[in-house]
Image 1 (cartoon, rainbow, N blue to C red):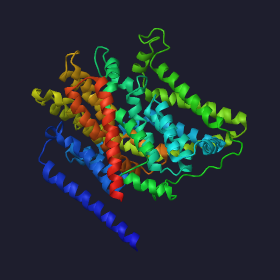
Image 2: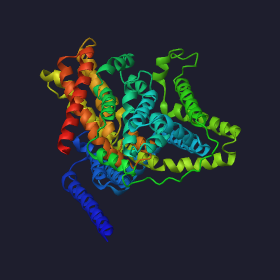
Image 3: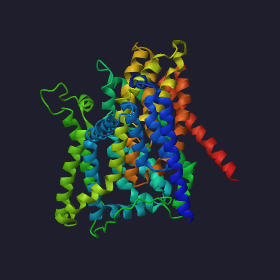
Amino acid sequence: MLETKKGFWSGKVIALIVAAIVILALLIIAPLTTAEISGTAWALLPPIIAIGLALITKEVFSSLFIGILSGAILAARWSPAKIVDVTVKTGLISAVSDTAGVFIFLIELGVLVALVNKAGGSKAFGDWAEKHIKTRVGAAIATFILGVLIFIDDYFNCLTVGSVMRPVTDKHKISRSKLAYLIDATAAPICMIAPISSWAAAVSQYAADGQGFSLFVAAIPMNFYSILTLVFVLGITLMKFDFGPMKKHEENAVNGDLFSGKQIKQEAETPNGKGKILDLVLPIVVLIVVSVIALLYVGDFFTADSEYYLDFIGAFGNTDATVGLPWAGLIALLFTIIYMALRKVVTFKESMDSIPKGFIAMVPAILILTFATALKNITNGDLAAAVFVKNMMSSFPETLAKFLPAVIFLVACVLAFATGTSWGTFGILIPIVIAMFPEEADPLRVVGISACLAGAVCGDHCSPISDTTIMSSAGAECEHLNHVSTQLPYAIFVAAVSFVCFIIAGFVPVWYVMLPLSIAIMVGTLFITKYVILKKAK
């Protein structure tokens, strides 16, 4: 009876929220024309609705769809036929088209994981880890190190680290929420400070005259959020403390509930007793090697008549991860099927049975990614959120220029949080930041780019509609909103320290001063936080 009543009140709350949003839209927005809404603060209303509903109701699919629908209503001005057209064509169909390569890669990895599990590779690695990794700290550090080593692409990072480390962290009673955070904290942040990555390539294309890559490298030492996230992870792991919702999830895990009551139902595989660690390691190594080759190939590294020929960095700057990674995934999958058959641990029929199983495992991530991308397309397309941000940034007083890096960081955070995309955020902001600091010799130019990139990663980290956040949940097989709610306080903590560092950097734009200072501030803040938590616990 209690559960029924609780469910009833939850449904009632959702209905009231939706009704209030619709009434508010009718009363406030109805008199406005499309031109009066496009490029204004109203453009950010749909993602705010989606994120707000997701956090309140703990239900992500309906929340995202309501956000898409509200964006279509704003773009279509209440015309029923146009609302349907914007929702389906501009939103959902475009989203599937934009992310088709990611979908294929997700499915390939899902199948690869199913094959490795069936062969007994994951169990063999878990047995090895049980003997060699003795503590929860050791399991967390091992997850962190693997995440740092896979720096090529965040999608690849999320799903690979998750599939490899789940048996290890489960064995040492680390919650799936904590595993999802460890994955997320070493996905986008490490890619954003790795010169050879799909993220470096993405940043490079947004600056004119070949300045993109040099700006990216120059910005690395003062990309405070990315660097301090890594420091934060090591700090809370070695200091053995958690706070916020994560603390409760970790306590539940120690008591045997790894999912805090929200387990994702997965069809259990019966592993082959002949499995070896090589059955796990070899497919992953092949996937990594082929991924690098595929990204270089797509970037014209091997094309003799290309301007990028024999230019390793140039090829990464010209590549497309949504093409290269599916290409690599297919080759790695074919290799694994043949290898498993030759090893006689998985039959050809069992390999084919793994294909639908891998697809089914990735369906929740694919659906969320589709809805999140559709929302982004409507917000950035029909409603021109980028225009609003550009106008807001250009009106900043020149007399307060030294505070601009901190302001850029905040704006990037908000934009990435609302749209769920870090790439889209720095794509919008990098040209604006370069225009604000036109002199190449201006030290604030690099600090501004660092703030832009750091804020994009931070907002992406916090957002429940971010693709990286979604895939971190998928990689850890963690309920998505559990991951969002536990990660948010940690991301805000690092963001607050980063904001202070960007204020200081506006006055002291010297990386070899700011980098050690920022790390010292983070470590000191962690010690103070642990002291306060222990004092409250007494």
